[in-house]
Length: 399
Length: 139
Image 1 (cartoon, rainbow over the protein chains, first blue to last red):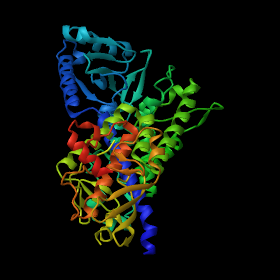
Image 2: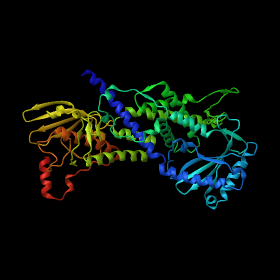
Image 3: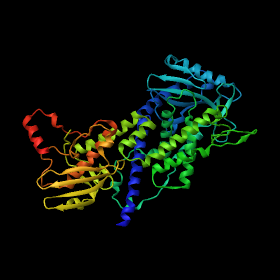
Image 4: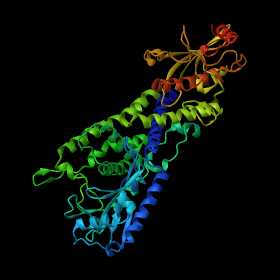
């Protein structure tokens, strides 16, 4: 008897953590691009690739167009207050060599796009890429690159912002490393209190799409938190996605290899907590600089601008502390309303309401269909576990 | 006693000559608060369900609570005059799960200000006889 009473609060906490993680997972699902949207974007960029390779310019004969950034990594988050989303593409021009001017590389790709009347009507020049705007749906950002003959890791070279020189990059290597890390599975402690329960009763709501893995969800939650946190900030100081993604991936690998966890939520929180430890701060010429390196090539520092714009450093640490505090507080909150309000303020009210409403709707539908149950510990559930009691029809009355 | 045997409402109770009082603690979902509940039942009458802790009115922050009876404050879980409840039914299979759903919709109402559990209000009908019957039953 004594044992039962000491085990119960811990079991409640684990159930709550599982539920909170499932809420975060559903929020990410609501924020990411749908399979249909990704497919539409793919059709568009394959057409662009075909158009470019049919050019009379022999330099464009051999090209390789592929998605990088969040679309390639599976960490997309729809922007706040905009209907269209970015799809970042690399256009690797295989015949263009590093002894030619970077500006020419960008120009030949742009010129060929403009030869097509349809693309000419939707093209927009950005500093390092060409943007094609597909009305109200998405835009393709096409960054031309070339082979980096000096990189043993299949790296590429991309024109710098001023189009004066080529800089190393390695989107394909980056993606492969990220995918390897995302596939690492954390070790979760099996809790006796829960193992003793009916398995079906431990999962109050069936969770779909867990195949995404905790690392991708961590990155998506952090990017969303950043978008909300910096919504009212006019200066361009918010941490860029590639920094968040890189630090989260390094921290995740370290955490899953070093620790044993109680729950997925604990993995997510630990990953966020240790992220700042993966920022390198070497002293160069007597001055401390910040480095978040692309580990898959030599010479690409994602945090380059932190060294000339110190406001970005302060913004990162301030935002990170807030994100960590918000996430760390979640497991101790009690009440659907209290948890909902906390998530609304850190991740945006419309998406959180949408997810919470969908859960209420599924409970109400199950209630109407007489498929709602009350199980010990779990409370309301859609699964009829051994000790569950069905919820019979009733009509709430009174004022 | 079925209330005693059902693990969803594990608690302690007192039987007396004409009825019973059952106290238990309950969390409607893992995200929810834990509530201290009391069910009072007089043979031949409809059971009354109270939330003794936390204070529902305080949680509502001044808003009038949905679907409750007043003086004393208790949950309105069934429509009088229907077959939803009969004296032969088990409380652990009716009022206990109904209270669970009530608490779920209550916490949801706290944040959305909208009661999503459906139901009826005494003023919602123009049928005089029906209203009278309801008033009698809920007195």
